[in-house]
Image (cartoon, rainbow, N blue to C red; front, side, top):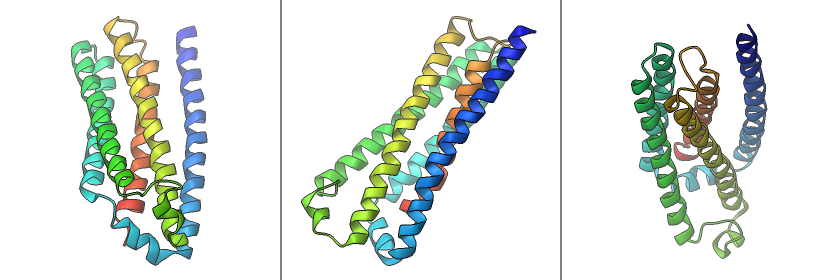
Length: 198
């Protein structure tokens, strides 16, 4: 009985935490919308400087990882421990590739001189400075969330491997999965706002 109450309490706590994350990114998206309203042409022009292929690949990676995380929870609840571990490993690899892609994308922008407080942006029109400022803040914050999500998945992997997370005790994996789904959902908004803007 106590274990069931603990799982319910943990689930409610996780949902409340996710709500604060939604408020955080929701505020950033509202800020983006306000500046987009003021500089629509500039945002459309500078959005073309982002690599849509990398953005699309990262979108696919997170969608696949979201599926494998959900499937890993189902596998654990059905007692298929090895399948659960394999699916978690795939999810972790997808997150790793996402961050590697983001590293190279940011590295390319830095090589072009497009980074916060750079000479290229300091003398640029306001729209360009604001666009790339929002780009680095939002994608950087999202990248940090991906890293946190991967840490949670790694912890879940270890607990499943050590049989401390089981078909009857799966709260840690469920909460890690909820967090990972939020990370994916946020990217679904980030991708079109920056990469597909017209």
